Length: 198
Image 1 (cartoon, rainbow, N blue to C red):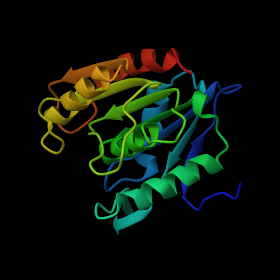
Image 2 (image 1 turned 90 degrees about the vertical axis):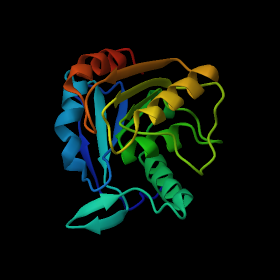
Image 3 (image 1 turned 120 degrees about the vertical axis):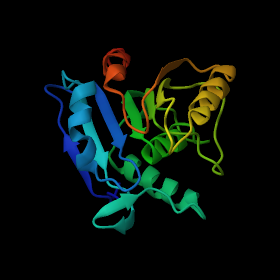
Image 4 (image 1 turned 60 degrees about the horizontal axis):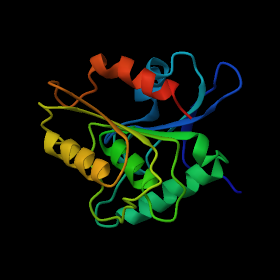
């Protein structure tokens, strides 16, 4: 398959990779923002890490995943990039922060796409507009969010948790009192979550 032009960083596994860990940065972000974070949640480097750059330039070399008037176009573009990597969905974990978490949700729950092994949604919400497959089989899911988040309200995380659990998904839900950032207190839980995958 011809690679799709989407700049990305790769963080190789320490040995033979057990799978791929694809992590999407947030709005006004770049892949470099989360390179150290991938090492934090996968300290043994079991996974081969991929950190893509969003396709829409905002300003100052910073990027966005979505044009909200036509989000399906960006989802299709990123799905094509993901498929071009040749990674096996059953051995792939999709994760993201904030808007990147929305992209992870959109790809992991897209109708007609095989589910990944795992899904990490941090400071995110379920996509609004694009169709979602809310029925088994589901990936293992971890949701992390702060009750003081003033960018993506905590109600979005709770609603996602409730909808996914009601549909039969196994959801690890991590809620702390932090604002719109990743609470370092949940890093051990995320490590344990990834250690059980793929």
